[in-house]
Amino acid sequence: MTKWDKYLIFFIILSSIIGLSIVKSDISKSDYKYIRITVNGKVIKKITFGKNMIGKTIDIRTKYGYNKIEIGEGKVRVIDADCPDKLDVKQGWISKPGEIIVCLPNKLTIEIVGEKKANDKIDDVSY
Image 1 (cartoon, rainbow, N blue to C red):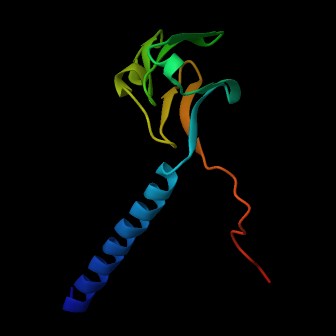
Image 2 (image 1 turned 60 degrees about the horizontal axis):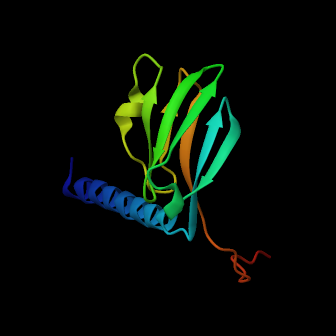
């Protein structure tokens, strides 16, 4: 491996890290975020974060199983489940848009969704 090969590899890795950090920072800048709960691919509940929701627990009972979630200040976690491995319980809190908790045996997903307020500016122009 020559000196220029090492420079090229370093440049590619550095470019990848910079690109990922830009994308990640753009995703986390949302004006409004909420919890989207789906079972077997269908949205069953959307929960908006708020002061009145802090500390609340929600039971989710379906034909696939049982999960209990707890809502915190801008975060959510699964605190109980009847699945055998309990990986969803072990995952802990999620708080950033794009983060997700999955319980495969119960076909449950809990996702933090972030949305930006709509503005009237043009994003792109194509000719």
